[in-house]
Image (tube, rainbow, N blue to C red; front, side, top):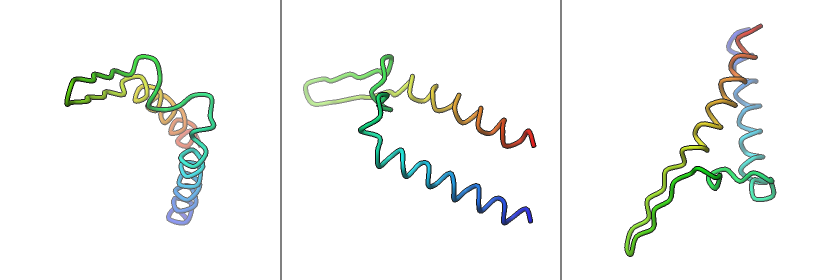
Length: 71
């Protein structure tokens, strides 16, 4: 019972991630381009630190995991 439930949850998560990647350009919030993400463009170098994007994803995943473990 535990393995089956885990596989179903993993499948749903993969479907949701796939939909976000597919339709991500149409969302009003573009992950990776949020205010607070640090970009440095030099003459020959580009450095990118998605600080706010990582924080937002961490909060969302923490809430989802809290709901899953609450049962």
